[in-house]
Amino acid sequence: MLKFFRKHARGWFMIGVIAIIIIVFVLYFGSNRGGRSANAIAIVDKKIISETEFRNEYDRLLDMARLNLKDKLTPETLKKMDLKKKAYDNLLDREVIMAKAADMKIQVSDEELRNIIISLPALQTNGVFDESKYQQILRYNRVSAEDFESMYKTDLISSKISMFVREGVKISDQEIHDLYELQNQKINVNFLQISGNEIKKNIAPAQSELEDYLKHNSNQFRVAEQVKVRYLLFTGDSSANIGDGDIKSYYNRNIDQYKSKDGKPLPLAKVEGAIIKELKKTKGLQGASSEARKARDVIYQDEDMEAYGRKNNLKIYNADFFAINKPPGELASVKNLPDALLDVKKGEITKVLSDENGYYLLQVVDKKAASLPKFDTIENEVKQRFIESQKQILAGKEAQAIADRIKTGEALDKIAKENGLKVNETGIFQMGTTIPKIGASQDAVEVLLQLSANKPYAEKPLLINNTYFILKLKEVIKPDEKNFEVQKAMYRKVLISLKQEEAMRTWLEGNKAAMIKEKRVKIKKPVEDL
Image (tube, rainbow, N blue to C red; front, side, top):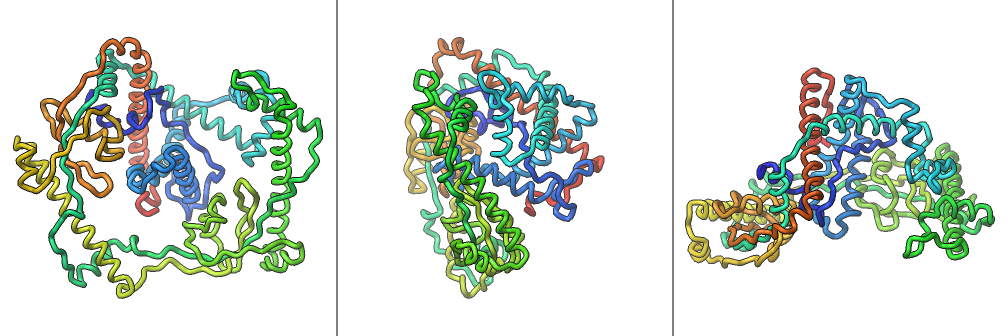
């Protein structure tokens, strides 16, 4: 059982407080279904998964990570999350599930779909399906009823598959207790730390070594593709008159958003101003969308944005060269901007893009291809990074050598003294992704779970912020058993969710491997090439 917890340590310890874990196989279905075969990253039973879908899924996961972690989303954390692989797997898993559902003849009838949709709380007013609210949500998300219902039907089919797989998962009381103990016990850890900055060895690389380093790490030095643009911004007219009927209708459809602290609906008079502001913005953006699309139709023909701007008294904005993947502040919030610019040649215009404030139409004035600077222009930077990388490698080797000595039974104090290191102590803390006096890492729990009274050391040093930490358990404080019975039901739900997730992943990987062998799944471009 401990092996199971170690395997899933990252997942359940990243939750700030214990809660019911929802299985991750709730699939996301974007609007770009079925790309060109030339743009395919994989094909599942003749259904194409395109690079565009991959980029959209990656952006979605990245947006979720930024929203949930905020300033805690460090480069190290982002690297550990491996969102590219997650996005790739999500899309492939989706199609494998649908293919297996077809094999198993699992379907959702139109009547079943209808009954589920009309029962969704988000589409109801006072407990009754609200057609106008449904249409409003569709318009807001720019999706037709047919597309939404098709996507939702697919999601329901995948839920049926998930239910089929997880029904057979069982757990024991001992497993529940093990999880409770691991989650609530407190520990104290001694540690040594070594970083590349502390390595005293003088490193003097030859030019051939630097050139070889540049060759094998070119992406670190490559200058991204750059683009220079001019653009129009359409924000719409927010001075539209809003009738009393529109205000009342909006209030009735969204009454759940307007409640006092005691949960009672606020009177219309109290929220009328906010409703008018929201309706004016909505109507203004609807007009802006129409203006932007009209402008694109005209400019697309003659490719003269400046003439269109003069004729219609519109301000032309300019943005000097910037990396496509790092738009300037005024364009940073525009959705899907990098993807749109990648496909546009010099002189051409993008499709209509948007952010929460308006609609954008951009024209590419000039482009600079991605390039690797000549060695002699970046030699100093290459040398600096080479030395840093070598010192980091030496620090890792030294840290592992110390960890190996500890495993043979040598005293930590003795080893520290020989190497001029200080033995530090975390103090008592509850196991999680953050270790006092060390830092935060998704690997922390995985490493801490290796520590026990019989084996107080970790197999490998823990790397956090370019520093290696050699850990040794000092003491363990067991949790209060009185609380176990009180919280047992909650831990049962957590554990069953974890094991159901494991069962679903095993089912998916097994079927995926079989379908690849049967040539039903064809990988056109592995994630490493994206």
